[in-house]
Length: 307
Image 1 (cartoon, one colour):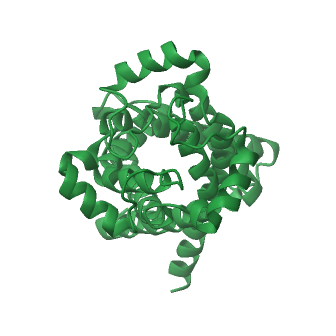
Image 2 (cartoon, helix red, strand yellow; image 1 turned 30 degrees about the horizontal axis):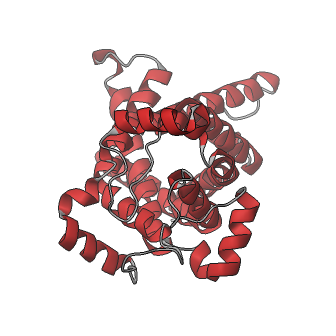
């Protein structure tokens, strides 16, 4: 692959990733709002609404706050998701190509090792690039009728207010646990790549005339692979998520304090707050992400061939 072909291929991955991010966030945002609110509720703050379960939360938010509440923080979510997925697929495929070209010179020898290292590298770079967007999105999602401070009017206002009142460091709150959770993406992409390879090889053995490439996979395959790989990553990393601070008021000094306080106040169950909403949102969302990504990438390749 020439340098020019390599750059085109990487940008095709970035475009496909951005479209996938847009499709995913549009579908899953209300459940993300519910997940965020469940994660910050510990039963001790009277200013936070209490929801019995995910359907009750969706119904209550919709009744009291309307679509505005269900899609709170949607603009930064769209920005963050399209930017994150575009950059992630760009960095991931760039790193994977580099590791494969230098396979004999690195300690990352196996295909699983290459996928794991590539996904981890991409995750770190994306985390550093997009953390401010996710901070603003979380603040906007946590605005409820019970909010006791001055509400933000939107993404721009929230960004400016946080920067003015709390400084640039506030935009990087949660960066450390975010970097720690890079392992989530690394596990997900490794599982996706390895499961995809198993399916392709199995079909080729069953029918040698089947092309040994991703072109032999269907939309149902991508949906299944996306959901399965996401489930593996969630079960492996969900308990280590740190809850966000509320309205700029620190709840935890650091990740260790967050874990200690959660165990003391809520027990092991506290580490799985919002898990149902998370699974309902992330498993279909992961399917949508990879369906959109793989199909857009295929269309881009076909368009280039015709041109």
